[in-house]
Length: 114
Image (tube, rainbow, N blue to C red; front, side, top):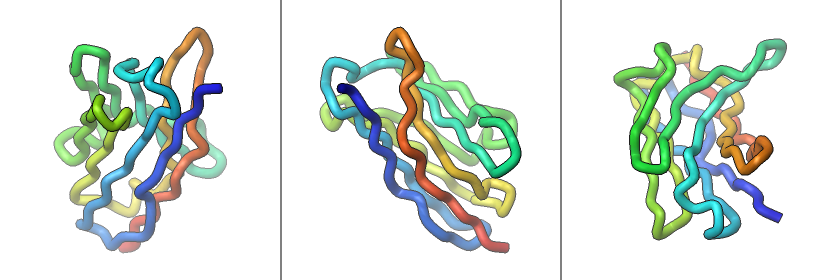
């Protein structure tokens, strides 16, 4: 069964950087359009970024200019480089693909201290 493994979260001070990784368990889904979402307790999931099969990228308004999504097909991995982090970026970050149904990773916690 295909699954997604996120990593790279942690605690960082405001203004710092983190890089999240989302690795597909199987090459059969390599290259799928992939999204990053985030969620804080009591709120719905917020779209952060998307990379399409052909490399087109889209970002949520709150992260434009600070976050960059990319992929390395040789490593079955999509990355989210997060720079100039702010306390309001604190959330659990999830990667997502559509394979006839929604597939989500387990999430990775990002905490930004002021």
